[in-house]
Image (spheres, one colour):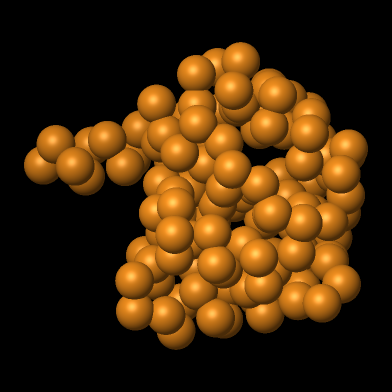
Length: 128
């Protein structure tokens, strides 16, 4: 299973995603803002980040820019959790290396499929 970092300022979303992913056997760490999320990337070395794109202090795009410019975790895959699904947002998020996105409110099965897809690609890369 994977270590997944959930970065979301909404406490309910963080807890729901954490509970769901833990029930599937994943290790989950959480942060309520982009700054704390970046620190956890450095200290926890997650396999995957689930990232809210609209947060105070540091939004998802700011987090992505800092993550991709960093030395230690620039290749960590990110799935955006967002209420913004318009084309311009999706193009910008993909430009900064988002592997996929899930719109809020999210369907747990959709989230699971997208997480499994990324985790399986990580396993395939590790095995190769």
